[in-house]
Amino acid sequence: MTTIDVSMPLFPGMPAFPGDPLFASRPAQSLARGDAYNVSQISLSTHAGTHVDPPRHFLPEGATTDQLDLATLRGPCWVVGIPDDVTSIGSTEVGSVPSGARRVLFRTSNSGRWHRQLEFFPDYVALGVAGAKALLSKGIRLVGIDSLSIESDPSGTFPVHHTLLRGGALILEGLLLADVRPGAYELDCLPLRVRGGDGGPARVLLTQG
Image 1 (cartoon, one colour):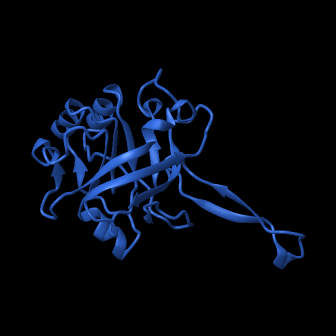
Image 2 (cartoon, one colour):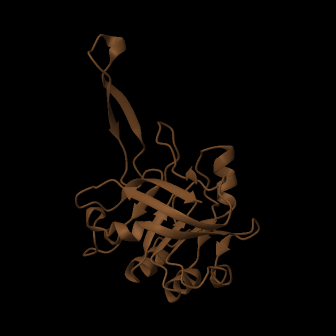
Image 3 (cartoon, helix red, strand yellow):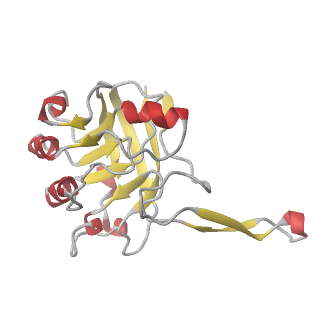
């Protein structure tokens, strides 16, 4: 069995979506200072690094992070490779998602850029509305991508998020997939159990046997 950790590490200076709170960490107790143990205080966004978008992220009455069915976040998934010249994932690219799949992760040219340097870049590859609708028509219930947002929307209305979350699909963002080949895997994604949370930083593993 091969297990790959596809989570983004959390560290000061890590990339963040523009406008989101930045990750910070400082020692609260320190052996170097003469304290009995090390303890750090951290501050982070509910959408820091690799994270899950629950319905509450955009829908006022939607389920919160702690109300999610973890069965949706664990189980068979399909990693789909998107050619480097594709800048927006549409219905054509979604056509390669196997029939019967319920979880899909998109590996785009974003992953190679993250692999070279973990800094935010605004021209990331994203999912388009047509692609989101095509995924829902296939019965997909979890959509993951290797960018900090699943969509690039200059209008600020976030139609892809609304389409997926209203359609019953959860969103997984901030994946690091440079070391992952397209194909079938077992997904383990466990977001922090944030009560009333609009997002959940997560440790995400892919296993292939």
